[in-house]
Image 1: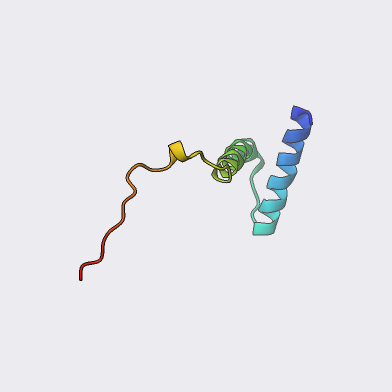
Image 2: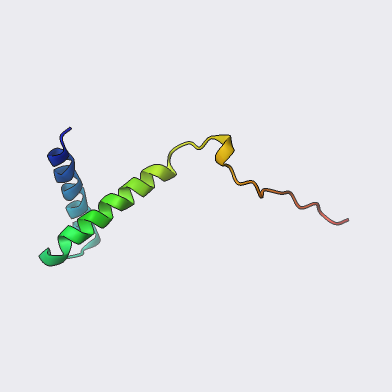
Length: 67
């Protein structure tokens, strides 16, 4: 896919989500929000990636129950 096609797909997705939410985005704010939406999509994709064990938190511990 070309960069223009990716941008067009992203813009269509953004417009569809805004319409579904019942929001009207002013034209002067749309370009800024499209950039933020693209960043959000990137971050969401990162959340769904598998992480190697070396990136797991080092401060994981188990609390023993007191009897």
